[in-house]
Amino acid sequence: MTTPTRNQRKEKSGTVVSTKMDKTAIVRVNRTMRHPLYHKVVTVSKKYYAHNDQFELAVGDEVTIMETRPLSKLKRWRVVSKQEKVSA
View 1 (tube, rainbow, N blue to C red):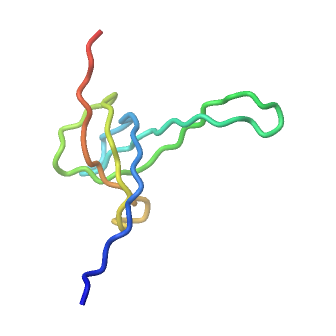
View 2: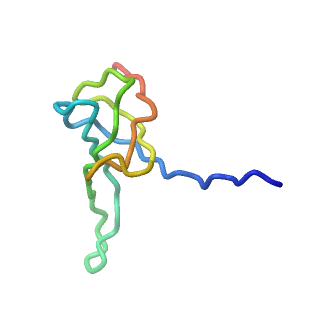
């Protein structure tokens, strides 16, 4: 018998927008795409609700989120890691 292998989970990185809910962080993920008609590169952002129970997050932190099973009505992602801030 071979053990079944798990599929790769999707990962995204973004910025924390809100941490007002208990164990939940709202993360904004930006991506660039080319406009289908005008062919200009535009930035599109989307907000994801991510489960967060082990990281101390603040608004503006850069985090990596990973796809997971549905945890509530809107939560389908979890916070995997917090990137270190680079001071300029």
